[in-house]
Length: 212
Image 1 (cartoon, helix red, strand yellow):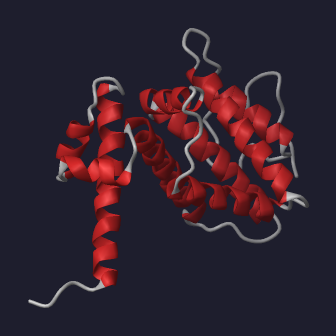
Image 2 (image 1 turned 180 degrees about the horizontal axis):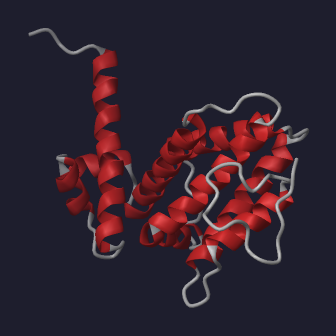
């Protein structure tokens, strides 16, 4: 049998890494961070325990990469959902979809997202990884298409606002309603309430939809 080509080996490594990332998301969402071991993740992914250490220096790094991948895939699906935005309002629609996608993750995966945010706020800090870079590229492109004249300023601001909204939704004992946070973000960016995936019932009292 002839040896595998470099491209085949690279694809196998990519698939192995993605299985580990997916397993980490599933297990932490089911059991919580402390109850999930690297061995559990390897077993769920059908991989050798040593493969986890080969790709990731630790569990926290693995989880952050896994959640960044989930965020990237969720955002990508939202931006590519039919009908695709076009015309003068395309940039506003894309930004609305991005906001709804990230707030939706906080709503649908509270344990996972709370664990992710807690990890970022610890001494270990923010993990730079391929998954985070893909997420950043999508958000930067969204800001560009929205019409930013200074993406290097506006992208970090959008990222900070979205992170702050996620923390506010997940804050134990004093959560903010996601609908209220959506309304504030939409108002800040001049987005019509009906863009993206608007919640039923219209904007909450005390806010009003804005138009770009």
